[in-house]
Amino acid sequence: MTETIIYDRLLKNEIPCSEELAGKLLIYFRLLTEWNGKMDLTAVTEEDETLDKHFADSLCVLKTGLLPPEGSMIDVGTGAGFPGLPIAMACPGLQLTLLDAQQKRLTFLDKVISETGLTNVRTVHARAEDGARQPQLRENFDIAAARAVAPLNVLCEYLLPYLRIGGKMICWKGPALNDELEAGGRAAAILGGRISASVRYEVAGRDWQHTLLVADKLARTAKTYPRKAGTPKSRPLG
Image (cartoon, rainbow, N blue to C red; front, side, top):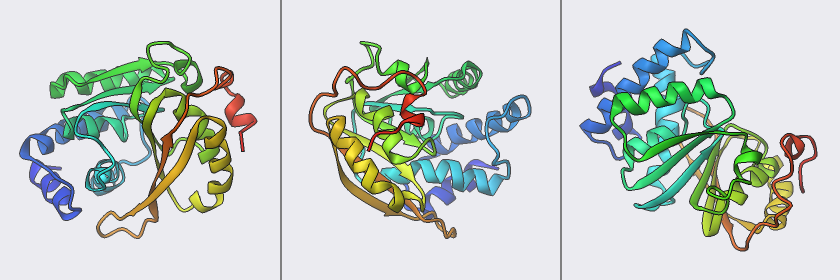
């Protein structure tokens, strides 16, 4: 992997890219490869697949107009940092919070943040349900995002409580989305939200069926939500 390969690949996907961004993503890639030998960060290990499935897939949102140039965003269940960390590298005006339940993943992300010199991102150790009950996090973000975390109705309970009124939930979804929309719409309404858009996007040279599902936060989420950790998944709304 080289900076040039990253730069050219993102431009091929019509994703805005600079040499500085390509350089930071290269550091990220090298650390991901190194640390993946110590812990289970990702099953994707090939260079081309990492570039497409992680970097390009995370950054395709930049060509949709869904992200504001400034504001706050939380990536819930960030795992190895996708989509939040590449977005933080590409969007210095956004303040990113990366939330995950496993401290060892956050230790890795803190290393990437340090090595790339990012100043607009922080990590938080919490389960999605627990974090949303913390006063400094609840209903405090412009964007709440998740990628490959849970079905849509579960994601609504994970994400909508983090959003201030007027904020947007953005979920990276695959082909199963059509089967999740009805229950997801009902769950969103219970939590003060409304599904407002679905934006299809492509990664050049791949036949993946990927969609960004968007919901708007219209009203405050009732204090009873999210329910205690584990309940949204075992007894999903909708």
